[in-house]
Image (tube, rainbow, N blue to C red):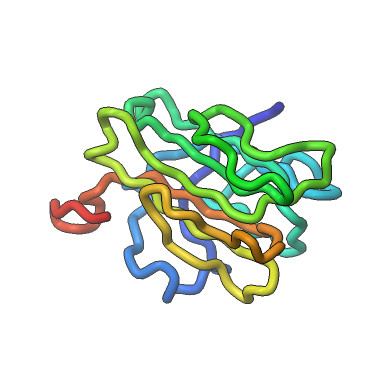
Length: 172
């Protein structure tokens, strides 16, 4: 699987009301990622979000952090059609399926390592039937739908320093 470096900048498709705590791109840690979508296959996670103009259901994703942020201990899980919640997976592991036409309906991210006190991960999602992404969510809260049979169409993930743009104060 080919992975590409993704910049964590904000996209115009994310409404400013959903981004109540904007962060300068210099404060974000770049993630490596690939999203697998129906009828398209693997696509690089680029420009800070995977919110395509012609969305297809997301079936799988994989993210990793650069060496400089490995101590952050990124983990994620996903909620799969007809299966339910996956276990928490370490960065670099595939979350979801390929070749089964099984949609992702929700996901969550969390930090567990020593650097987790200095960073937070926040994320948004676009779910079928919604006109705009919802979020931000943090600290393992599920983003998406469970028990509603609605497919996940887009996602955005940021790993940022807790005091980024906040005058040294931490935030959650």
